[in-house]
Amino acid sequence: MSQTERTFIAIKPDGVQRGLVSNIIGRFEKRGYKLVAIKLVQATEALLNEHYAEHVGKPFFPKMCNFMMSGPIVAMVWEGKDVVKQGRKMLGATNPQDSDMGTIRGDFGIDLGRNVCHGSDSVASAEREIKIWFNENEIVNWSANQSIWIYE
Ligand code: IDP
Image 1: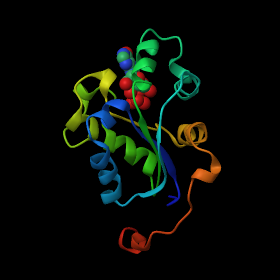
Image 2: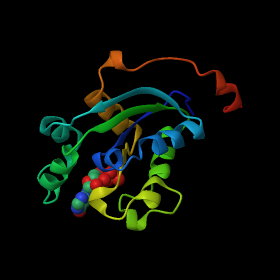
Image 3: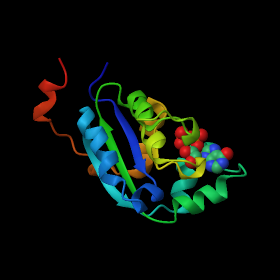
């Protein structure tokens, strides 16, 4: 399994407003994943239509878009072995009511439309989403000195 797999993780406006940024970043850092891109973004309708293409036209979509544009989002790319699947596990189920304790949504969320954090659901989605939110030159290739203590 590739140690250079990448996922797109975004702290939604509720996570930023509630001061959860450092906690969420800290979980990925402490797990051993490598941060290769990060920025604070004000989402636009065009960007959300692309990112959430599969949900365009659904009844909840307009409200969800307004929420996602209600404040800044922390957009990130994290890299490491199996990071897409592991990232989803760290987030917990989509609805915080179903998320296990110990996950980001299980620890910090109550309502479906305020679930704090986004994570790509497959390697293909990750590649698609990273291209939507980041330019190639915003992604930094670097080697983490601690990798020998994380990977055998
Ligand atoms: P995911 O974020 O776990 O990948 P998706 O099904 O892709 O889940 O949904 C995207 C986001 O849209 C969810 O995280 C949630 O915040 C919101 N959402 C999904 N379904 C509903 C709904 O039925 N009502 C309100 N918001 C929803």
